[in-house]
Length: 114
Length: 116
Image (cartoon, rainbow over all chains, first blue to last red; front, side):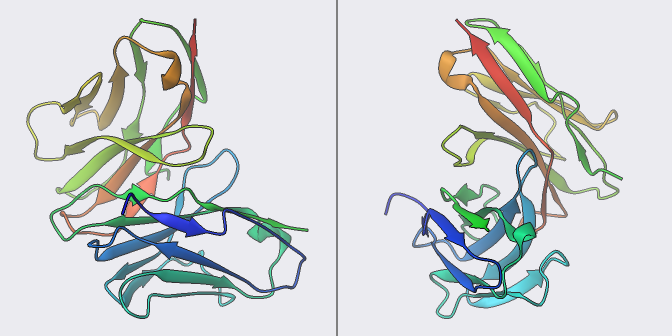
């Protein structure tokens, strides 16, 4: 296991379609984060899991967004009825335990909504 | 109000010179953490250095050091002996609350260009 992986790396979709992204964290990491990054900005926190429990969800995450981590391993982020404003890089990160401060980021999924 | 402020959208530095990237933060928490990440053009965020609010000494990691001035609420990144591969976006981030807290806030970044 060499790091956090995300799939797909790029996604182009038409407005109104649903999309789903996957994140595989580093295997022993129990914490998983989703961020959104738009051009010229830093990552913005979207949601956080500890094991399979979703403990926090940003108000940036509208009802069209849902995230799961069913077995405490990989996570999925789904966007329903995509809008052009959803176009961004979606980053996943993981970390180990309470004492670890370092988040390991994946390469991101770049979403383009046309 | 911005929690993390990076006032330098872009910086240039000559190869082998040192460069300081500025970061100021705003929090009322006593326990917090400050981070710097590097984001090359490939897009992946790379952890560089961490400073805890209770750490009395400035953090260092190889060519990176964090100039932590708590009273001024600043956490500047110093890169010594710049290399061409240091050209990237650099983000300052803060974890509010004690270790284990999930909430991380990022600044808008500084684009560093190292000149040969």
